[in-house]
Image 1 (cartoon, rainbow, N blue to C red):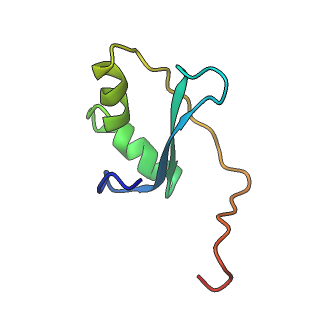
Image 2: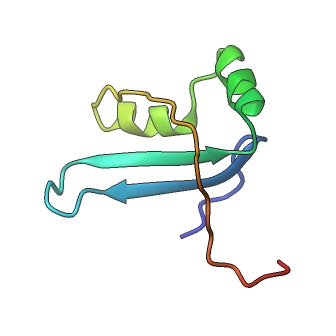
Amino acid sequence: MPTGKGPPGIRQTFLVRDATERDTFLIVTHWVSREALDQMRASGVTPRGVQIFQAAGVTPELSVFDVIVHRDGAPAGR
């Protein structure tokens, strides 16, 4: 479900829910580069995803992962 334009540097964002622990949610964001992520984090602006969790009364935990392999299922030549 598209939710509108996010900050520059975001390639994709997903809101996912645990299949068994239905109260556990994650926001997974794929950035175009580590530099884009670092620039956003240095800006001092609270990310929209963090704001969403805070509005629900939750303090989110933030983690950074490196993408090792990415496959989007798009046909060749896209």
